[in-house]
Length: 159
Picture (cartoon, one colour):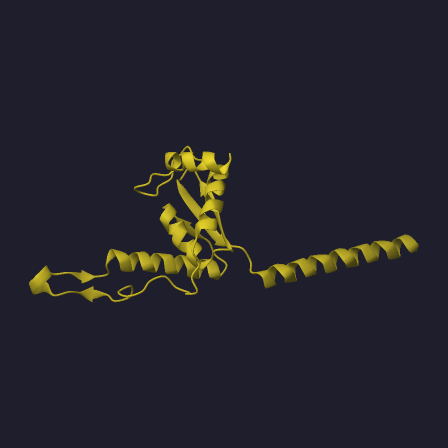
């Protein structure tokens, strides 16, 4: 599937109104879309999602608008995204149910975010790849282990 085919089929597998996936979409198809979403993502330097009114809870003027007490949908959404980011940054995994949630996560973790689509449940499992320092340390440790194994086998061959 090339980029043109993917653009033509994008809305067939993901509703433009809801961001919900189709149960007929496979993880392989999703990975193509995810790579396109990653390229289109606009990274941010902020560490948390939200802004004005994202953390205030409470109500508003009951005389003018009617009684309202509690968190707004926007505040709940900010909490969801921030909880997902926190869990993934601490080595955990998060579940996403809409493509726009993944798009928002990509703004904060453009390079490290990984996803897997589960068609049976119609949700995504999301996690972060280790940072470059962690990858380099793991690669060095693997190289050191492999080098010491080769050295051990050479010593045994000499005996």
